[in-house]
Image (cartoon, rainbow, N blue to C red; front, side, top):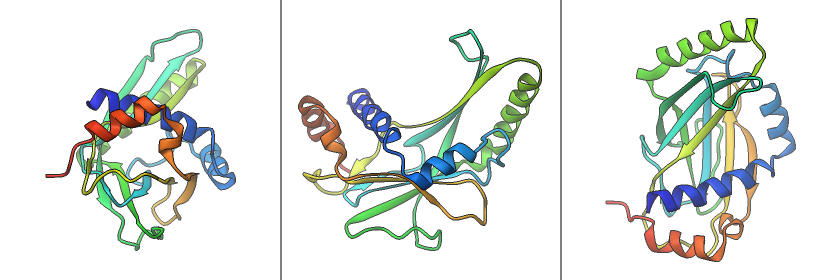
Length: 192
């Protein structure tokens, strides 16, 4: 079930990235994950309040690949701490929406900084490209999956900065095939 959900979610994320807001495009283009203090890098997701995300449901990967190679020479995955937004972050949920804020777990910050330092050394001597991705592998439902599931994503890279909305999708289920939607409806777990 988790693989089916992860595959469906990946399809949504790929389409979501193609629907960046203007402010989101500016924020992403100016974000340098190698120079940003990992303690200040935060992401947020706004989704129907039927969903719950918990610490461990998502991971962030930072990788660096040399030009002309397929396999990254550096690839590190970090557990994300997830909390429900309280409004103090400057994030206001739409009616019926829950917003979850994700950040690299405190225990992983040292390793994240080490990863950044290793990439900086490589960038000085060899040409390549970096990648940052977030993988949501699970979650749960507090009530049946609604017919329409809006999705908003946000990013913040400075402790005192504002969250910038990256994407806004009216219904992520519209982005999935009928079979994928049926699979999500059948297999998405209820919260315990």
